[in-house]
Image (cartoon, rainbow, N blue to C red; front, side):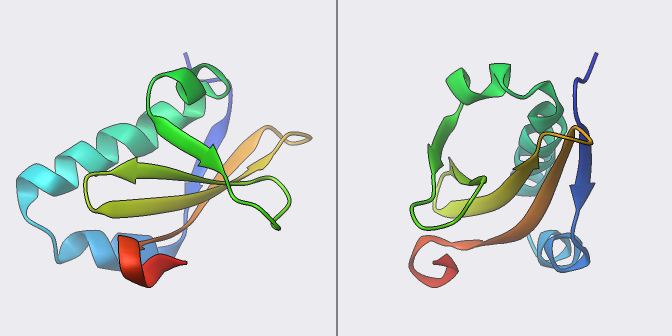
Length: 88
């Protein structure tokens, strides 16, 4: 059972459309699992982004998924995804 609601930004959906199915499924599994915050922090390579409040990144191969944790309404906002050199 998910503790947090996961909201995915439209540009993340569009990015995922252009990926191979195997990679897309892997990323979608991670996105679904983000709802189990804070337990998910130990499961994946997730680090806090310095200089941004409540912002984290999760490494999925060469891709980075940026998400924000909004603790009051218990919501995870997946805001961006991209390749390592382009996302930050």
